[in-house]
Each structure stands twice: as C-alpha cells, then as structure tokens.
Amino acid sequence: MLDAAKPNRPELPAEIARRRTFAIISHPDAGKTTLTEKFLLYGGAIQMAGQVRAKGEARRTRSDFMKMEQDRGISVSASAMSFDFGTYRFNLVDTPGHSDFSEDTYRTLTAVDAAVMVIDGAKGVESQTQKLFEVCRMRDLPILTFCNKMDRESRDTFEIIDEIQEMLAIHVTPASWPIGVGRDFLGCFDMLNNRLELMDRADRNKVAESIKMDGLDDPKLDDHVPAHLLEQLREEVEMARELLPALDADEVMAGQMTPIWFGSAINSFGVKELMDGIANYGPEPQPQSAEPRQISPDETKVSGFVFKVQANMDAKHRDRVAFVRMASGHFKRGMKLTHVRSKKPMAISNPVMFLASDRELAEEAWAGDIIGIPNHGQLRIGDTLTEGEALRVTGIPSFAPELLQGVRAGDPMKAKHLEKALMQFAEEGAAKVFKPNIGSGFIVGVVGQLQFEVLASRIEMEYGLPVRFEASQFTSARWVTGPKAQLDKLVEANKQHIGYDNDGDPVFLTRLQWDIDRVVRDYPELTLSATKELH
Ligand code: GDP
Image (cartoon, rainbow, N blue to C red):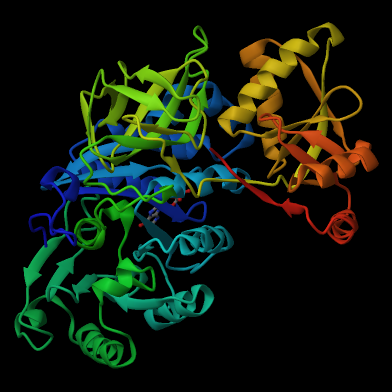
C-alpha cells in the first residue's frame, strides 16, 4: 500500500522524510540485477534497464569484467541510482557483487539506511549473503528480504524461513505467502494487506493482478485459486500465524526482524509489494555517527561524507568522482563546503546525480541523497564535508588485506610513476599500498586474488605502465598505534616488518599469527588492529 511518507520522526522535513536510501545484498546469481532493473522500471527509469543488464552480464567472466572496468561509464552510472516511486524518492546504492570486492561493499553499506536481502528460493541463504548480512548486523541495519525465483522449483516456505532464522539469527515474518511452487506457482497472498496477487506469466513486465480479499475465508478466493492450493494456503497461513512472529515495525527498524516477500523478479512479481515495503519500513534517513557529535538529518546545515571514490572515469582527464552520502540539510549546487580533513573550503559546482539513465548535474540534494563530486584527488574515502563545523563522520573502516604481493614497474625508470598510480588506487580504496621500511618497491594488499589482476590491468591502461606482481613473504598487515616511545622501539627492533600506508601510518607486516602474538606479548602498550578508521 502506498501511502504518504510516514515519518517515524515527525520533525523531519517532508523532502527528507520521503527519501529511502538502501542497498541490495545477495549472493551472485540470486537476481540482484534483475530486481534492480524492475525497480527502475517501476521508478519510471526504463531506459536504465538495459544498462543494468549490461553490467550484470559483464560480471560473469573475468575478461568481460575487465571490459566493464574499462567502460567506467557503465559501472559508475550504476553506483548510485535515484528514482521516484509514488511520493517517495528511492536512492539505490549498488554493492559490487563479486566477493573479491567485499571491502568496497562494506563501505557502501555505511551509506545506506536499509538493505534488501535477495535470496534464491531454491538455494536459500548462500555464503556471500551471509557475509554481507553480518556487516548489516554490525550496523543494525533494517533488512527486508525478497525470496526470488518462486516461478521455479523452490524449497518449502517454512524451510526457507527457518533457514534464515537459524543461519542469520533474525526473526522472520512473512509479508506475503506463496501459492503453489514451480510451474504451479500462482502468486502470493499478501498477508499485510489481505490481497491476492496473481502472477502473469505471459507478460514479464506487467504488474501483478491484485484482488482485495476479506481474509482467507473470502469466497472470492475460490474463483482464482484451485481448491487443493487454496486448502494448502489456508493451512500454511494458519500455521505461519501461529508459529511465526507478527510484523513489528520497531523490531524491523532495530534490525532484529526481517519481513519476507516471495516473488519472481524476472516476472516482475512481488516487486511492487517489496517497494511498498521499502517505502513503509525503509526507513527514512537516519542520524549519522560522527565526532564530536552525531549528525541529525534534519539539521539545516549541510553535511555529508565520502564512502566511495572512483577514479579515471574519463581517461582523458584524470578526474575522480567522490560519492558523498548527504547526512544533513538541503544542499544546493554551487555551495561552498568545508573539507574538514584539510580545513579548506571547496566550491561544489559540478555535483552529479544518477537519475534515471543519465548522469546529470545535481541542482540540489537532501539528507539521504547520494551525489558524485568530481575532483582531482582532494576527496578521500571517509572525508567529511560540512558548512564549517569540524565534524568527522565515524564508522567507515579500512580492513587489513588478506593477500599481499610485492609490485615493481616493468621499467625501473618508471618507479615514480608507479608510486603515483599506487597511491591513487590506495586513496580510491581499490587496494592497500604499503611502503616497506627497508628495500624498494611497494607491497600491495587486497582482499581477493582477482583484485591483483584488475589492478595490473588498470595501471597499464590508465598509466601506460606494465607492472609485475611478485610473491611476498608477508601474508597480512596490522596497523600499530600506541605511545611513541614503544612504537619507535618496535620499529627499531623489527625494521624488516614495518611499512607505511598511503597516509604514512605505520603497519606491522606479518607472516604468521605468531608474529602478531609476539608483538602483543612484547609490547603490551601497543595496539595491533586489523581495521583502521578512515578520516
Ligand atoms: P545477480 O547475479 O544477483 O545480479 O543475478 P541476475 O539478476 O543477473 O540473475 C541471475 C539469473 O537468474 C539470470 O539468468 C536471470 O535471468 C535469472 N533470474 C532472475 N530472476 C529470476 C526469477 O524470478 N525467476 C527465474 N526463473 N530466473 C530468474
């Protein structure tokens, strides 16, 4: 049901209260691309559909993936998409689907207020879904679940719900209940609105037929649902109402309960109901944790933070786009904001927004929106922009890499160029780059093997530098903090283990867990950390 924006904090200006900023989390192949496409169709951004499709398919093979990386236009315009749904403005932030890019995904989730979890009805909760769910849990993000591909043979409805409850430790409440499975799948009974939703297999882009019912005993049901399926539906819904918790908006808001919709993205079925769910339980833009104080979206002063940087979108100009989540206020194009890290003013004259299929100038943006700010490298992940106040958004992590390799320029004369390229990728968040305390060259850290290949290809393409990655004796890195005297002592005694990241912060490069244990034992005042707050 689409009603006017229902603010849970009534003081929010209507423009902010109608915004829903969310991401989709799923395991590859569950149907994220298809669902995104349907969101955009309902949002009136029809031209976009092909583009999303191109992206989903490009990801399938490694070489195609490289091609997609070359074609920055596609991946960028899909990084954040805004579209209207009824009286609401949806901002869908794309999470990179490949597990190798999980760190980028984690950071993306810092920019949203909710997540839609898509699972495949035949496969249930898969590994990547679980990993992403854990990140949402760390932030208590509200999660709405869409169980996709119900037009195919899928698991028993109770079994799917049980699996989610067990594997993810979250209460599940059915927002809809499927009628029939596989080829017999007819549609759903909308448990929130007492409606029968019938799927149209003939027209994949058609909104389901929706018939208002007066409960499950409504005789109208007999006209549309064969007797055996109707009997099963009544039994199952009765059991579900007995065994499963009823929808509690506060619990959803706290990330302790997820409503589940059943549907088939490819048949556009269940999508509108899910979108209504996002509108109703979304939620609206939430306060942002920051130091020295939290930022509330309704503050009149504008603030925002960078959660993603994408470089070299245009090979001819070395421009970068910093993706900024607006945390408060009403931004207008041309505003001068303070870049808190450098304390310098920045005139934001060419902000872009990704409305429908086009990247266009953002004349204005409200708390909850995502804008892209082209810049020459001043803006880094974790940076805060304000109207002057020294606020620093917190909670945007950088994770210790899980794979390390040394890297050298194919031509030793080009070492300086390589350093520049690496620093840029480090700032973009595409890799960790450490300068070892002794020796030449750099150590590059990533989360997944594929990232080395993507990096090598981007350095060659964007900087014309052939590079060689080579094995490193190190396997991981920890950021070291603590009293200077202890830190100096550690550096002095472990020269070959020390490196510096692109901010100049020291890291301890490790081979084995034993290395870490040793430092913890010998230097009790130092802290070794697998994550670093970016700011
Ligand atoms: P992603 O990897 O999560 O983005 O998944 P895609 O949206 O690319 O979908 C993966 C595959 O599942 C594609 O071949 C889709 O056509 C197919 N698919 C998506 N939704 C449905 C659905 O509701 N039913 C069926 N049968 N297939 C679907």
